[in-house]
Image 1 (tube, helix red, strand yellow):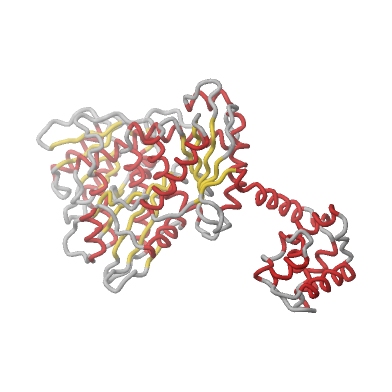
Image 2: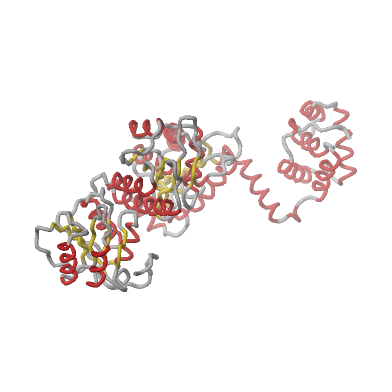
Length: 550
């Protein structure tokens, strides 16, 4: 039988999708290969599904997957139906084993040239049909079968039950905002108050400790085990739901007495891929429009789209001025990618309500909002409102940077660089304003760029400054903070001494010795500026480091 591997994504001009690629999309949680003829998964092409009742005549099945509703996998008449299906051109047949093993049927199917698949006993046939149709639609090969159902809203519940049976514990499927989209209902599995509240409220209770757990899950490549957050909570395992690199949500499982094994981990991974298919398929027209605008803005941010293309895709008229708003979590948080992924959806929904013309795109480091027209005050107010919404909905504190306004959409990469510069300094400084433009953060942005240049070209550094810092470090002296305090005080020994809580004569002595030991010319304005910049970038605030008299 063909091995379970990803399909070859080379040039493919034949109609339909290979059976193997379809099964790869659906995953073995919902469809398991019982047996297949040689090349049956790789070579046979699928066009549609056919739901068949045993009492009805078998229709033509060229390129079809046959769903054997109500069939007994152990009955001779089912074997006869499968052989007939082979003659009618069917690619595969799906049955429910209902406690049987299906070996006789599988052997007959293989001999006839049909792949035999099984689906869980509790899976609804219309959901199996919907899953296969979704997989075919995603490949561009599908044709709706007669009576096939569109997304009915309960496919995720069917998936949750299938996963719960596969891993042996109750399952909850959530979106990025921790809303409960679906949950398993298999009897006899353990639950706790935390799960009960989440199901009743249709949203997981928000706890500060959970933020870290969600970040870890969204950053992890596979399943993670999570310890209980309280005495009454049971241990859980979780996996992220992604469409490519785009996070969509999470799947959580309460582990029973038997920990989830390797097969269970694979089932969760397959379930996450299948959940992503459902979640994308259920998106409404407005959500699809938001996604299209996100892709347009992403291309503009990366400089991969022309100004004309960006203007057309975002629906902006000629001469429209835009401002770019960047939002990011504090720099002290190491899980920026996970935080921005969670915040991106909430930001997009908020801006679509307050200003539908805006476009929102998320990256690993920040969420960007392109705002057309509007006075700076309005953009600033809306940016502050967005921070409030994100904190209230997700419990995340973020900072916002406003670029200058520009009517040249070809300048969007430069607007992004400006917003990134501002975010870099305000996210790192807890005293900085929550919303800032370049005027609010100009000095710190300039110093940050100077620091970058000095790091890139260390030969530009004044050797006396490096020698002074090394001397302080090795001998416990305070020359650097003293010179910095004097420069901050614009040459006033009295003000500098008060800042460091030392006598003015001590300040004078330290400045004289700094000149002698390290060759600093503090009488020249340019040298003073050069020394001050390097010291500001290298030392802690003087009031926090009084040092000792040498």
